[in-house]
Image 1 (cartoon, rainbow, N blue to C red):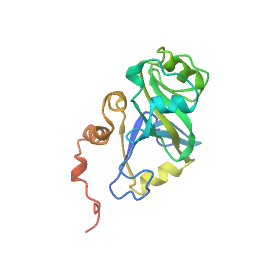
Image 2: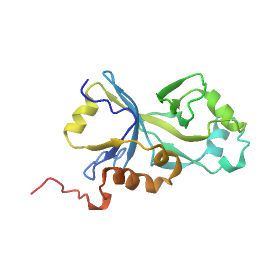
Image 3: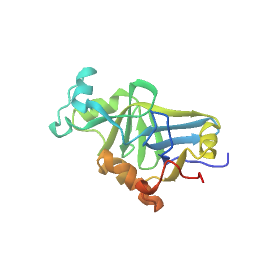
Length: 185
């Protein structure tokens, strides 16, 4: 495999017409010969953590977490929760993205969050983004995405609307300066 974009952001180019990914910032959790898996980190949906917990019959004790938004992680398995978090911890079903960051799909992490003993930082999504073997590389060849090594502070510490511009800054590019006509004479 030529490139490994694990722990990188995919920044949708302005000409991205796919409604799932237009103006999106996607964090790649795994990229290998079998394809890629990631979660969109800048698309809050109209669902709070408190509402999600109520929907799955879990109590959310820490009141400061009640209004945290749940995010649209991507168009695959949108009925399933994915928790991107620091530290990695010990959960039933976690993909270790790197030493300090994990993506967990098992309910035990949400049960811990509900009791106030979850990970220090987290972003909860419904759904994920997936690419078959070679598909992401093909899209990169079509100039659908810019890529840059991810910064955890962008994922966990910034409001949703600031994440895409902050990722662009990592590249030294002002998102507003990218035109939908880039590359056309």
